[in-house]
Length: 311
Picture 1: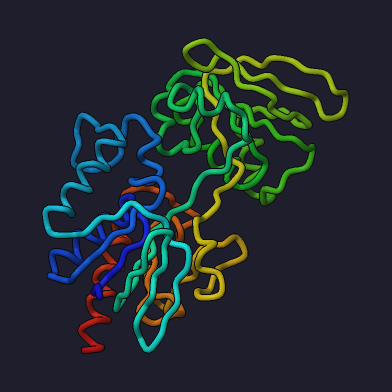
Picture 2 (picture 1 turned 90 degrees about the vertical axis):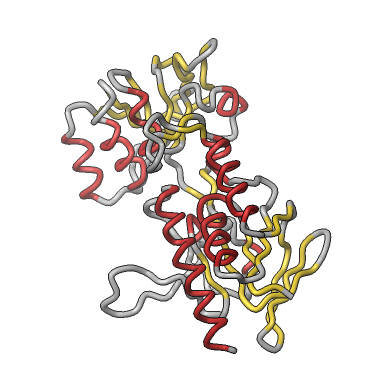
């Protein structure tokens, strides 16, 4: 029997574990198939406070993991398949075992959606990114493309104009899913151009990205478009499928947390008493490590209060 079982690692999970274990709550963290989350796939992280010279994403996650181990968190590399609640106790089943807990904190995150091209992985960290906020700084004075046609693509493109000399939005259709105001803002920006009815067939380059091969969806012709950076903005998928039928999820699969009237920020409570959620699995907007860490702290404190009130 655990006081807290945290499902998912990354900044939200490790921060939650840090706070619960330091509060002398018996804590287990089930790290999932990708311990450390999305930061383990990044290179240098310059926007996490406390590292004036930056830090590699995988190293930041190793440091967080070591920190929570120091306070007694039990970390297990496994993947949760099912959760149910019986008589106020959570039963968490994975491929290897079953846990019982008084509370559960879900921090399983969300993963960026990719086109499915092998070259995306080949050039990951070498010109391909799914986060303009994270990596835009490294493309100062360069020409980049943004793949997508929704609000996220318009936001990413507009943000990138702060650094890049030119931003091209590439979209497979002539119409955009973006809201009119976001689309108009992008169209008015002199640094942004549009390529419509184009699909990306390949990302090309030697040691780094030098261009993308495009196919015209109307004429069928192909061409190589020069660029030094490719930003994917075709959406994110929260890792919450195992929660279906237990926790309220929105239309896109993000965990729904309580938002009291007049509150300045959302809480971490779900519709299931004792089950809390934090990080990118509840946050479709910011998707930043520092935000996830803050929510992880909130979830830990909420879980501690829940246990105290139940005793």
